Image (cartoon, rainbow, N blue to C red; front, side, top):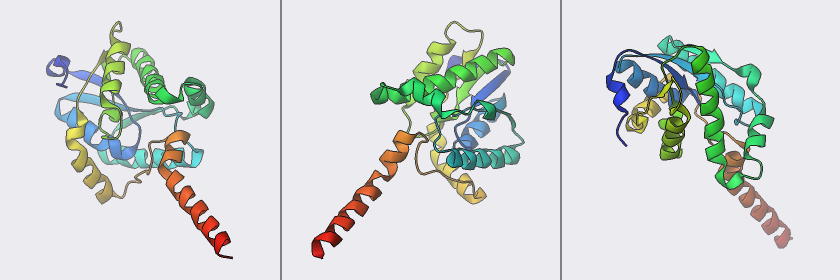
Amino acid sequence: MAPDATLKEGPKRVLLHVCCGPCAIYPVEQSRDQGCEVTGLWFNPNIHPLSEYLRRREGLLEVAAKFDLNLIMLDREYDPQVYLREVSHREANRCFHCYSLRLARTLSVAKRGNFTHISSTLLYSKFQKHDMIAGLGRDLCAKSPVSFLYQDFREGWSQGIKKSKDWGIYRQQYCGCIYSEYERFSKELAEAVSENEAEKGSV
């Protein structure tokens, strides 16, 4: 998918939705290299549990300090119930509704803040549904004065990883929601159960 044509036009004030510190590194660098004025938006009610939210928040603040990046922190809007209401009985397509929730909030903030474009660091991760995110962004902005600025940030995947490790930024082990946490660690539970059953069987 090619970058949007709008990337080649005049100066842009971009509100960049940020999912975590490590994923912000390359998108911020790349967007600034393209002449964009970037502000980060932290809005991620999907992250579970709260302790994980706080760790990722701290990682973002560390990255922002490295870049002297202005941030809009919507911590007062952190409420897992908001996310769970969006995905309840839609679990099979939960990623779509999670992306939509966060991008729609980004757009609403951008409109009030006189930003010209929005984008998201979700476009950096190789583990996210890239085309779905890009399509949602374009659809949300289709009838809006704010444009969706698409770039395939995945091309900087290795660069972002290296820099986040060099800087000692917290790197999470799952996407963020309770479902992805379960998927990430369910194998460990299964192994623990198997070991327990094996021990009982040997008695």
